[in-house]
Length: 234
Image (tube, rainbow, N blue to C red; front, side, top):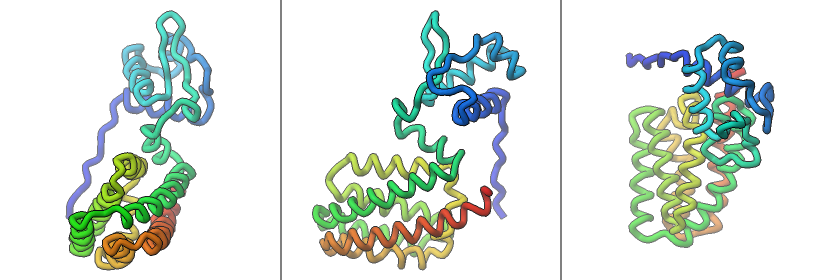
């Protein structure tokens, strides 16, 4: 039986997590200047070097901004942040994850419709191959990854690269909790059967049917995934 390696956390990792939680729960609110580094380090019981590393990570994540001579300020991420924050937010809060799935559902239906109208013969054949890969996956993890490739190919078939980037963004948003969202894929053959109406409608060039099938598929899998997640994270 394979054993999943447990990641070791450094002091910087722990401090980064605590600071991030304090920012997201409002202890350090949007627009606030953080206390001076010496005071902040003492408050968290760490060295200033450790603090600098943690602050640098949070600045790269888009939660902080530092200006020489002024200090480090908490950014209003809901006003100035980008989609790169979603993995962190979704991993922290099921509410964010539910909102990610809502966007996934709406975007996915539009993508399926446009893919059906614009796909090439080669892309139609590729979609059918990828659907078969879902059915032949050795386990739930493999089926989940194969399913993601189907959705990337659907986005590619729209002919609009922004849809592909949006699809990647939504997958990345729930990547940190992907293992807990495997319920719809534990039976690869059943997973492929659920997805088949979407793929076939796109392959056959039927936009109305593709959109309706995608809406049904995304609602069904969303319910299964969020339903399996709640007991584990209550």
